[in-house]
Image 1 (cartoon, one colour):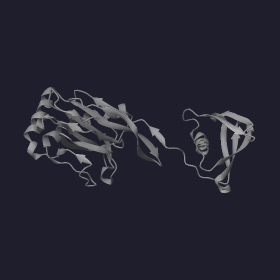
Image 2: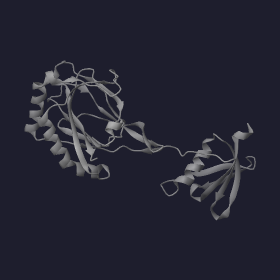
Image 3: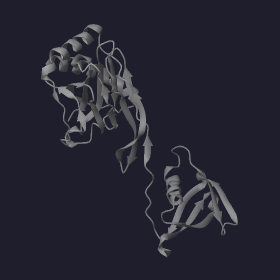
Image 4: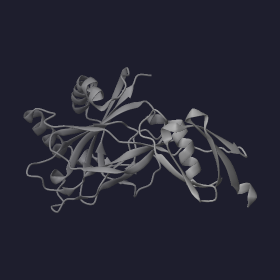
Length: 277
């Protein structure tokens, strides 16, 4: 239809201008718009456009594209911006005696672990067991996280913020357990989370398989973080802590524990450093 055609005048460096006709949904229109909007923020494309009925070609660098005039007026959104997710894995996080103490504690407290839940109350979205009320663990990880956070944030490029509470929970992933794709800041009660940490600990030799932490890149669309393509499957490492920003999407892949024994599970202390309100 005629109204679907757009006359586009390309304003080029040196005062040159050329007119082309494109369909309103032609990806070229979005690319031209994004080139003007993104100049000075990295690489820009080169263009090879047919002109004069296709008998000639107009070839120019995106650096020479000064602006666009469209008839009729159009509103074109820039394509979503991709962002590589940054994460940090710190090994030997606790001293050997504290690591052993953690293992003894989860075995001793097995009966107090409860089935995990999610805010949507979907029973198939997350399968694991959690334990919250362990004051000694909370005190230990609050002290260690607050001490390490400034260096973690510097390495991850996280802007400094005033520290608030440190959330701490113990999680056990047994045979067939998992946690599907999610992020840690997607609900109003999670809005002040500024940093996520996951501390891994388990018996040696390791008696489970799987349980990799799959982390995804992000796509920024309309000033919101959306899930992008997968970046890495991070294998759990004993006595290590994984740190990343809460907006990053991730999941826990299924765990296999052939023995079915609780002591052979994949254990974590996972939580968040909150921004002060």
